[in-house]
Image (cartoon, rainbow, N blue to C red; front, side):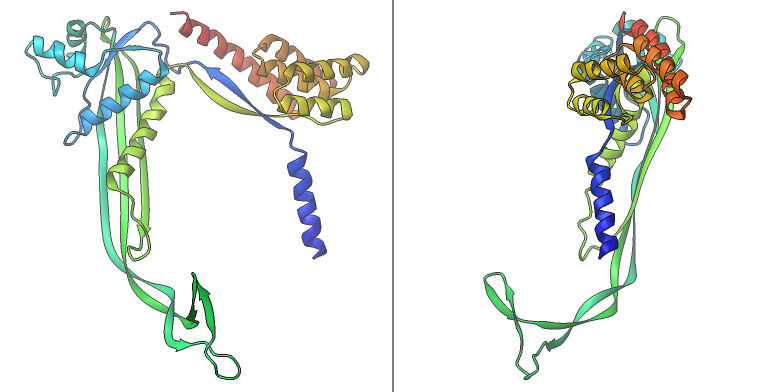
Length: 338
């Protein structure tokens, strides 16, 4: 009991003394395609109607970013009808430039679906289950024991464990897509990638609810396409930062920062550094604060100062990361100033 008490006490102290904070960081797209302002997403090559479905999904996710001007598929279809053309099979790497000029866009997204299927394998398997023996539990006097069930009472059954043969369904789902973004002006492939996601699980129909096939395909498709979007557009990620605890002044600043009161936290830490310039945790925490507020140059200066006070690994990592962020910030500004 004492060991359990001390374990719970330590766990409580760890949780209550959390030093973490999460900040949002905007990162540039992996591919700089900022010059391609107006784009179209055409049907992908895929089985049945999956190509049209995935093209629509891709367009929907891109539209949410508000980074590109996207030619609506209804408008795209109208233009094609005017030119007596059909979308299906007309666009490939060699025809993208000519097609893009017809519909009036800077870039075209096209691709292939190399995996889009659900496969069920049925079988049987012996599993250990509690089975009613046909008898009821009795007290020492031989009277049947009753137990509360809902609003009434029922005889308490006696169970035993047995190996029972049950039907199984093994459901395997896979979605694999590759895409290319082609410049209409040059015919160059400006961005491309290939990703896949899979799902596999065994179900026992007598007790499990088997999810809908289309629902699983939709979920995996969203995951794959979602991994493509940061390649093409600036995006926000959440980054975890860990403060360093020290004296009451520094620790109070941490509490303020965790509540979003960055100005008060900075004021507390600056006062502490004014009194004790060698207080590494206060200096390091100032770096986190400035980074959270987007002042990367001041954050870099604080991390450098903390590193001069004491060569800790976390200080070195923070300095390295802030310099990478400055490079990313320059790329981001170029992509946003279109």
